[in-house]
Length: 276
Ligand SMILES: C[S@@+](CC[C@H](N)C(=O)[O-])C[C@H]1O[C@@H](n2cnc3c(N)ncnc32)[C@H](O)[C@@H]1O
Image (cartoon, rainbow, N blue to C red; front, side, top):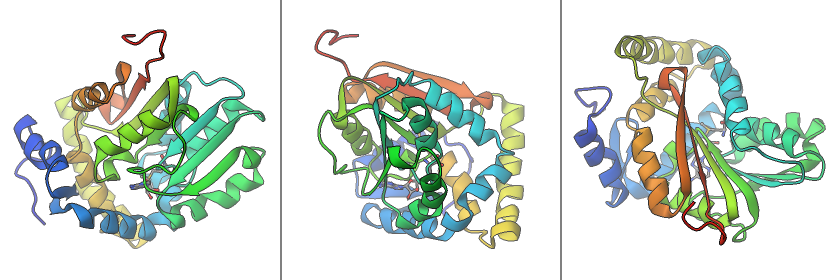
């Protein structure tokens, strides 16, 4: 493992290891720098291995807080009944379910994920629910979304963009499939702001999380990779700059739980408000 000296890279380190790698032939996979065309295979292997325990482990490791983050994140899109929503990297469907409840029986949610095992782990529960008819499951790559231009009122991605080899391509695809005036939402892990809290979070992430992964899921590797990938991820200001560069307007972010998670929102400008 090629572990950096500092867990949270400074701006220069991140520029080299993360943002710079976006334009090069390498990508980050946890603390390892891997050939860009091999990251997707590693991500697939990772999610194949965690799929059966994904929901359970999320709840245990976050003490259930991820449900509250997801509720706040979906509320931040101000969805209305009848709208069409895309859930990129939708996995087992938590965000899709929350959106489907809000858009109601006349609305639609397309859950789009590259990993069949993740979707199969979540689908039976949602198929049995009243939202089953409103959620459509599509397997595909976030970097080349196989859906029409301007088809959605809102597009969201929860804890997924970190895994996409070319994050900027993923966001650009979300921009493409949004209607003018449509809303983007991205929920991702980030760096806690308070240094003492961050120290505790690092301790928890690197001492307890891998052990819990081993004990509860028989998978130490996956729960070592998870905190590493968070440390290598771009900071909120860097994500905002990327979204603005793609063309999103009204780009904002909001930190949750001292910055462990961050909600990013933006809007695809409509013809009536090109510089909104
Ligand atoms: C951490 S899970 C998040 C699942 C769900 N959104 C949630 O909040 O619980 C990340 C998901 O991203 C998916 N994913 C990773 N790379 C992808 C890609 N290139 N295209 C589409 N989905 C991808 C994985 O298969 C996985 O289901």
